Amino acid sequence: MSSKRPRAASTREVSAGGVVVRDEQVLAIVPTKRASDGTRVLALPKGHFAPGETALEAAQREVREETGVEAEPVRELGEAHYWYRRAGQTIGKSVTFFLFSYLAGDTANHDEEVEEVRWLGLREAQRELTHAAEREMVGRAVACLEEGRKTGSLPSVQVLNFYSTIFADELKRGRKTATIRLGDKSGKYRKNQAVLVTIGYQYSPRERIFEAVIDQVEVMKVSDLSPRDIKHDNPEFRRHEELINFLEHIYARPVSMDDTVTVVRFSQILETPSGMTEAMKGFGGAQN
Image (cartoon, rainbow, N blue to C red; front, side, top):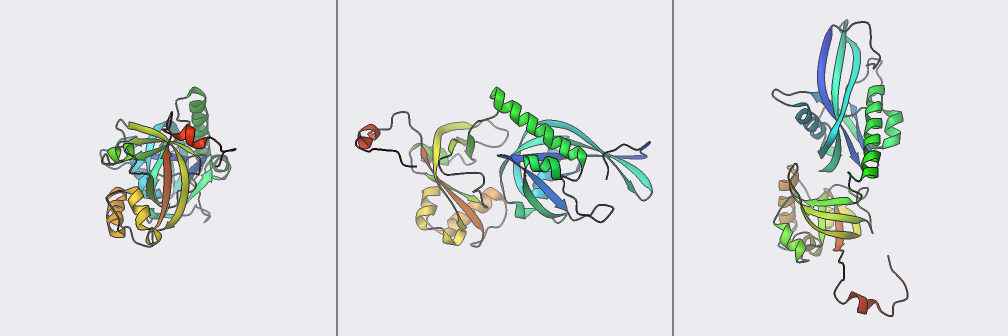
């Protein structure tokens, strides 16, 4: 496939895709289908419209199917144009790309049309993606992110969001002090990182609960979780079976004792913690 336009295109295809970012990384796929010369293709997730879908709906579905992750749309980036030969015909293809922010999910859950899903650095993707048109889309995403940081239209802290409203009271009362996320999230959450804890669903208003600091990030198997770990995630749970049922409901896929999870422990940031000033008197330094 080429991004250089030939003299005429006898057939045209329309698709939609996504540039999914997490921190300073972007998701890329290696499709099972090879290029015309037999080489592997490194690309952005994209695909055709299903009947009745908008471009955004198609892009979000393709991202979910081809990468295994859920992502939140940020803005439209524009159209990429390709031309390629198939059965003696010149095919013109237009793909509307959207910038997405990673929410959740495991890249191991991609569909059978994808051989591999990998996280690339944003600058690396601008060099390594196979198609020039897609490298340009990543460049547009980088410009959008940089502009957002300058103007304050993008958050300067990581958001730690919970979909279930049953957690709101537990968080406010200090009973929920950890979250167990499916997959290895050590690249997303780090010790001493400031996060904004929110409650809400995608495309809906979120309730701001409080600011917090991450105390610890541990990656382990579900089987290695202790009853204490499970309790800190959900005060009503103690057993692995209860946690597994809950994760299967949230991630909409089977979960086993061998699955990898990340335990993120956090503490609320208070303006004037009760008794904190007095308790800290006499200590000669700070501990991280």
